[in-house]
Image (cartoon, rainbow, N blue to C red; front, top):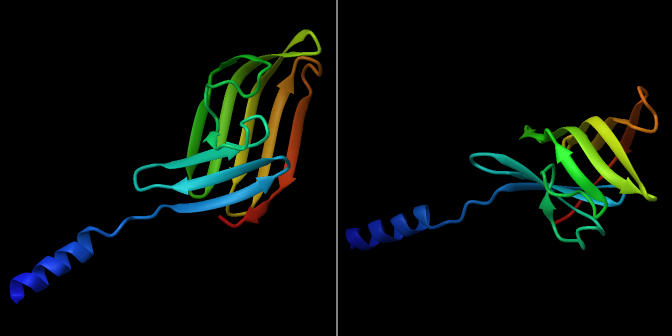
Length: 139
């Protein structure tokens, strides 16, 4: 009898699945998913370019079909906030090759905001910024 109780107790305590915390927010045309894991946090995104399938946010992978190269990518995710920085991105637009540089994007899943700043080859030393107030989505 004690052996059966011990076996049931062992099975209940050690076979339950551990679920990660997920927060999903919609900012403009993009949807972002924050996943809090045991060892590291992660952020995924989806939009029409990704065919509405989640992909890794802030990777060296091409952002769009017009992207030529991305250099100096840094990704930080913790405390319901994600930061993506890259040094330089080259891409094609209307037959020209353009460059954006020193880009910083911050997704705040606690405040439901997104902020981006960058410098563009068309605007020279002028800093460009975009701010989004996002909406929380249900899973």
